Amino acid sequence: MKNLFHLSLPCKNLVDTKMFYVDTIGATLGRYANNWLDVDLFGHQLTFTQAGKFDFINPSYMFEGKILSSFHFGIILDIDSWEKNYTKLINQDLELTKQTTFLKNKVGEHISFFVTDPNGYIVEFKSFKNKEEIF
Image (cartoon, rainbow, N blue to C red; front, side, top):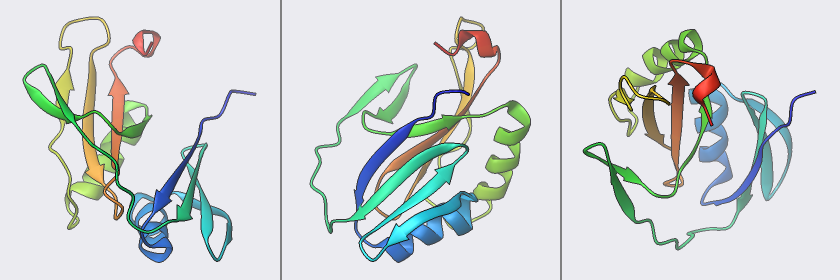
């Protein structure tokens, strides 16, 4: 059994959050109640709790000439799954970055794109050229 990742985040609206993760990204809906829901995002558990506006200072940082959000989470996929998701999401009306290759020709080379969910959270999709260089 591989270790699974769990992340719990506040959300503004459960219906919009469910639609984004289940209908748009393709995650599977898990357990849910009136004020929270779980989604299976590529085998990892995200829990969203109805909390209204969440005030979080969201500074950015510069990495290889790109401005990135300091606060984001994401999923590491094989290149075929990454390309399938990028193609699916790029043609939708979403706040989404263009694909970018980071650490080109260096240890840890990977391709990424970022999409913003209805709560303002930034979700990164990435695929490493060499999976042995993930960490």
